[in-house]
Amino acid sequence: MDGDADMKSDADLHDDLLANVPSLAYKKEVKLKPYPNRPYAAGLPLGLQCADDWKPVWTVFPLKAFRGSSYTYLKIKAEWDDSDLLLELSRTYDKLRTVWRKWFSLKSVRSITMVLSGACGVSPSKNMRLRWFLHHPGEMKARREFMQVLTARTDLGIEFVERWQLLRIAVAILLPVFLSVVLAVLYSAFTDDVSSAFTIAGYMPSAYSVCLVLVGLLNFVEL
Image 1 (cartoon, rainbow, N blue to C red):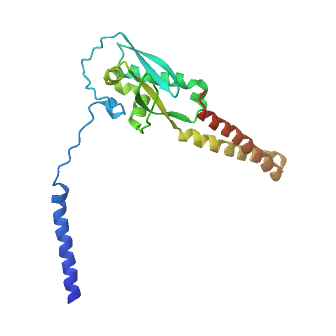
Image 2 (cartoon, helix red, strand yellow):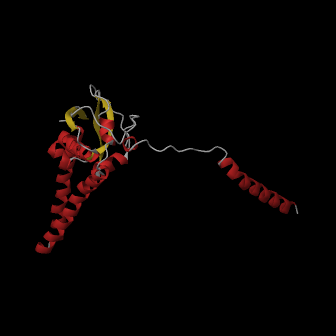
Image 3 (spheres, rainbow, N blue to C red):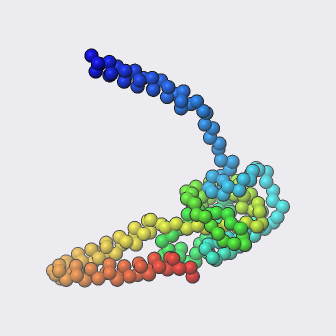
């Protein structure tokens, strides 16, 4: 009997807790504020209110763009929209990292952060929205939100913050393994010497690993 009473009291307590959950959960209303504009959502929180009828007073705006210690000037034209600006941002990034880094580097742009154009101190931040905008500049056609944010102050520039590209790293690691297996199979098929085939094929990953380490070291060296 005492056990039944305890079970009943536990059940009643459980019901009482469930009954109080809604009042406890919604006692304080949580208000979620939307992002004021797309540049803010992409990691450029300059606190600027973007206007649809924005007309710049300048003809060409020199935006200083950094990648590490190197920099260049992106000349933004007044007649551009956000689509044109995002395209030029991608081209400027490729220009800063040079051709060989574009095709062989294991890194790509992770985000863009606003920095004082006289110095280059960056606090990296994860932001997938900016990468999405850079890959889909057409979505910002006829808009001028990024144009207004990036040209609001002459004392601010931008810096491209890089991240490792997992796809390229995976390809760089798996490619020599795949090629060595193919070589071993072909060699053994033509010579009927399986032992020698896999011995020869084993040298490929060893030699390739040296090249891969060299490429990895070059990614940490700013040329």
